[in-house]
Amino acid sequence: MTKLYYITHPSVNLDKLKLPHEWGLSEKGFDEAKKLIEMNFWKEVDKVYSSFEPKSWQVADLVNEKYGLEYEKIQDLGEADRTKTPFFTFG
Image 1 (cartoon, rainbow, N blue to C red):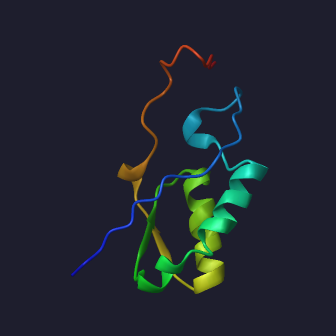
Image 2 (image 1 turned 135 degrees about the vertical axis):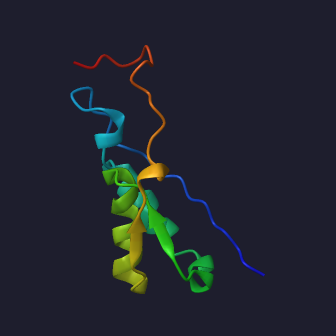
């Protein structure tokens, strides 16, 4: 049986000068990602996919470093459009 593990990115560095799809992981996010890659399910993983966003491929990079799992970036895995979210002001 094929299994699919969907992992959302950990905590990000909220930067009002950048659009959400440009954000990377915060220090807390890197700590969370490091805990994630120590979990046992990785031994079952054959393929990793990431969006083109830093917060996503930064996790995929850590997985690659630890397990040697190459990853493929896919455009359609990107951030939902949050540019209309009132919390943020872009421009």
